[in-house]
Image (cartoon, rainbow, N blue to C red; front, side):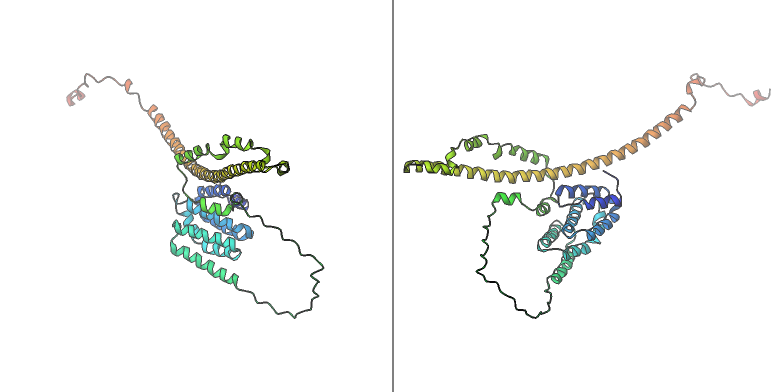
Length: 342
């Protein structure tokens, strides 16, 4: 990972979006540089205040991801964030609409459920948000302006505009247009899946509806009469009409069943995508830990190699014991005092 600096952090925060991948990538980078936690929180709070209203909630998402994934690394971020979260949540609440406020409260619910902070501290944040929301909801008094006579246009002069029919969203539309922020809050903080569960989920997708060649062939072989209204004019008798009606009913049943399977497959694929995202996030974290350990052991190896080199050099400077006279037969007796003076 790249080295830490305040300028680099400001650049990364300026590119922050509601994308789960971007939030988790930046979260991992910050957790890796947790020794700069105080500086990180100061920059985070400053950029939160400067950020556009539509982007402020994303900063809380980033804090949420950091706090839930740094438990095993150390208490640095819990201590650093603990001093600024009440102010940060209050600031976001002042600029929040109803939908954003629901997401803010949802973060606090998750923290309470998973004991990210003590309940007393979470309740303090709730109280600060509650005070802000009450102030923003107070109706503003308006000055009463003198009434003016306004000419009313004749309603018959202009025909009222026809209301466009609102198309009811299908389950498929709801799945496709699902909000990314709700999706992130629900699924990002959970524990990563086991490799066996992920393999099993991927294996099950091999038998998904989109791979069912037999059903697709049946749909492709449906007669053109079931989808071409112009061919209805060629029906000459009741018997032909009833026969076509039976074919259409059978085709509707086949298509409805297949569409239901496709919707279920979309859910399954989304679930697998989330599992993959969580699994990749875990593997990146483990990879970073392994790289840190590898660097630590390389440093230790270099120190041991240096000691080994010094020891080898010291051994080479010691006298060669093989050059000394042999003493296997014993040493000669020392001369007596008389021999020394004679």
